[in-house]
Image (cartoon, rainbow, N blue to C red; front, side, top):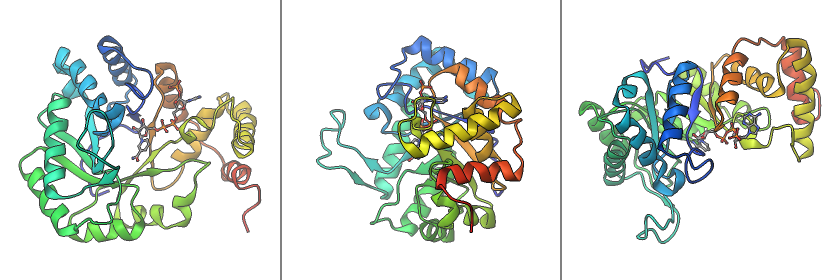
Length: 295
Ligand SMILES: NC(=O)c1ccc[n+]([C@@H]2O[C@H](COP(=O)([O-])OP(=O)(O)OC[C@H]3O[C@@H](n4cnc5c(N)ncnc54)[C@H](OP(=O)(O)O)[C@@H]3O)[C@@H](O)[C@H]2O)c1
């Protein structure tokens, strides 16, 4: 790995902590942050847009109340999406913007919202068809030199797009959707590239964004959960722990970005890091997802 960011082996995703989900108040943010840190989950994943541009600020309010927490955590945020929102009346349609001006303004806003003087990791949220790799590289380089961001990465990029940016400035992290339900990154070269270039992979929606649950509705998800429950009996674990251990077992040492808003589920996820499936068990889960044996 070409990066020195020491993030935790599980990341707490904050997308649903605010207006898009649990609607935590400041004291709930504080107790969730404290409890996560207590469990060793010290890295928190944001994006400027979460909660319609409000979640970073709410999280930052908690940091303002308890500033000593900042040194105990790593903050990730993303920029590059211009979302239509009552909080951004100037946005007429949803679009992407990876211009120097947008990236810099977005970073300044995130620093202010999160009540911090640096971001541990900045990710470009989505590949922008109009992105100019030189402009991105120069901007990111400037932000790094000023100490406003410590590390840089991308999210949801194709392998060719990662290579393009990596040619101009090191891509240290790639965050993409990955779970037993979404195995495209095996097939499209995303994970191969991470392994080859030493890019640290982060998986969003590691539990299918809430689709891989005991109440799963889709047939594929039900089959995956049923297979995970069977393996869970052997390991004294619950299905969600088995599904996380499946992901953790990949040699790319993928870091799951957990979407839960409940500390008990974070605790369970931490325990999942000690479950080690056999190769056959790993393939059983893959078969449950694809409905067939490998060729
Ligand atoms: N880079 C990107 O483009 C991108 C896109 C999407 C998300 N993300 C990041 O990834 C994070 C995770 O995404 P996600 O929310 O889709 O992840 P997820 O962990 O796959 O799904 C979490 C959702 O599943 C629910 N859930 C139900 N049963 C659960 C169980 N047994 N264990 C855990 N969760 C269970 C959670 O509800 P409870 O809260 O009630 O537990 C929550 O609503 C986000 O917070 C965000 O930081 C990044």
